[in-house]
Amino acid sequence: MSEFAVEATDIVRTFHDGNFRALDGVTLRVPTGQVFGLLGPNGSGKTTMVRILSTVLSPTSGTAMVNGIDVVKHPGHVRRVIGLAGQFAAVDENLTGFENLRMVSFLNHMEKATAIRRSHELLVDFGLDAFANKQAKTYSGGMRRRLDLAAALVANPPILFLDEPTTGLDPQSRQDLWSIIERLVEGGTTILLTTQYLEEADRLCKQLVVLDHGKIIAEGTSAQLKSQLGNTVLVLTFATTDDAKRANELIAGIPEKPANVDGTVIEATVSNGPAAAADALRRVDAAQITLVGLALREPSLDDVFLSLTGHKADDVDGNVDEAPATGRRAKRREKV
Amino acid sequence: MTTTTTTTSTTARHRSALYWTFSDVRTLANRNLIALFRTPTLVVFAIIQPIMFVLLFRYVFGGAIHITGTTYVNYLIPGILVQTVIFGSVNTAIGLAEDLQKGLIERFKALPMARMAVLGGRTLADMLRSVVVLIIITGVGFLVGFRPDGGFIPYIEACLVMLAFAYSLSWGFAFIGLAAPSAEAAQAMTFPLIFPLVFASVIFVQLSSLPWWLQGFANNQPISQATYAVRGLMLGQAHGNSVWISLAWSVGLIAFLAPLAVNRFRKAA
Image: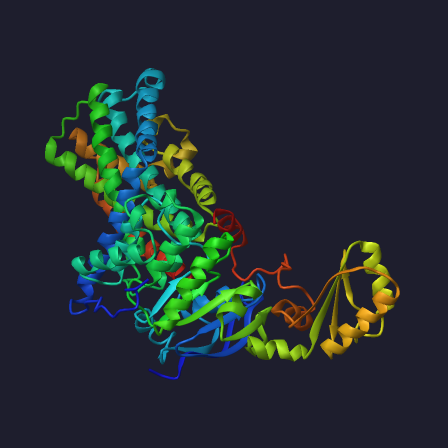
């Protein structure tokens, strides 16, 4: 097995006769055997990238190798080493869970007996065996996602692409899916996953790239990205918004940039955490303002994203959509 | 989660590519047929509409339409059958648009299956569905007085001619389904294409009853030719070369539409 499961070089993909560049020169290397994150807001080009790597779309220019195989020259070979779980649980609602997996097994060119055995095996693994003979339309969102992921794993692919695997899921289903992903990686699978959730990238991904408007704006481990900020965040919580406002005036000068006041909470980026905390505490205490909470925390990926792009990760730029059919995507989103 | 990562030798590729292409088409046709039979309302609607047309034209408008050479019900039913299989091929557009909307096309495109199987399986399933509808509507026709004189074998030949024609059209609808933004839009887009061709034809009336400026078009357009062929075979009154013209249209349309649909499939995700 090669060192990199995925090597993409200078991938460009345009839509609308070249008028829209969904990907604008993306280069990335995914090391074998880990979870690699593609992080970015809606319209940043994540889905387009996954579709190119999984041979669903062809790139306008650039080269991509998956497991050492060129996706443009030998897409058929690439399809034998990958599994794809797209953005919207792609299950046939009219088929039962078992029938869905059996169909995908057949389409992976398994013999009948193997297909049936493998389908049952996966239903058990994903906790769906009790619902094996129920139509997928009766499944909850979390169950559909698990069935979708099971379908991507039918042929035991060494490389798995997961496009926003937890979008639209409740917290418990999201936890369940995270555990599944972690166990897959322990078993040796390489996973490239896209997400808008910084928490998810932080929890799962060893390395990640941040995409914005089709370009990579940052890459590294999540710790490296956080250290780009180089600072600690001081969080002060007060009983009332008035107290928070007064305190903010008092602590002026401690953070390098003016602090962010949100209701009763002040968040200040500081270079020396403990000293800044002590200083702030003294000033607030001297003015006899009651402090409800004080905390120092590492910057989150949210903070990193904000400082990199100037907008929050969940800001949706309404004018930019990475796929050409805006209406269809909007429709699909409602479905999940 | 214990067995997911154990290596089972899961794939068997010692068979030929052709074997797997047929296997893939069958798998997907089967999937579409299962869906069809689990959604009885779809089947019921597919049958109710042509029955309404039969009753409407047999008992309401039929008295006002004059036909030479046979009874109106004998004239009407072959036309209704042609109309029914053509309307049935619209399902190809709706089904593919739904698959696209739900992300299934994306899934299929990332699988090591035959590329044409998605379209092949869908069009095949839609054709088999038309066979069922044809049998039922034939039965309804007999109930309202349809008595074709052409014999059994020509009747089957007539069915094959119209199924071939509808099948060729379904590749055009496949293109529409893959180009449409949603299933609803796909359905709406097919209507203005199909409506004028079905009604400016010899399905319900004789050519001579149409205004002179419409006759040239109505006589030569492919749906009329298919209707002439089907009616001629069923009633035992051959209408020129219409059988061959209709088959030529089918071959020509498929040669033109299938590459369009396949090309659209390549771009769709």
